[in-house]
View: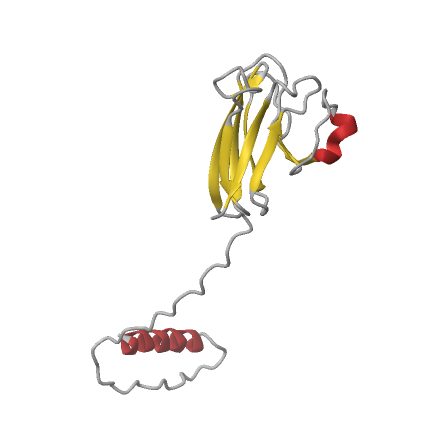
Length: 176
């Protein structure tokens, strides 16, 4: 097959060279016949594996329903707070849905921190380990965080002024 292309290419060159200023045609080389062989396989070079993306692998997903003024399905968060469990150090997605009529958020408090009542977000923000943004009534959002590596129970609150202590839960960090 390569020989056929070579002959065609040489013919084109011959025609083009004949268009020059010389009145004597230049001789063209006649290709020698080549032996044909069975087609050979072209080696396939494996592509380098892609580097891991900057996006971390989500190890746990939490569902958080926010009502006025409680998390979950029970409006008695003081006596029976909802509990969410995550592996230590894991990347966690939090699916938040504000089913109430007020603004809400979901915030993890520093381990063993003493929370003032009422919690005032402007004055007590240093007590928060991580917080999702505030959601208006009817909004849904997904946020991610890295779970603490220290095992144990962490208090989760809504940091909107006046919502804690009624609106609270527990995040239990367990070994993987």
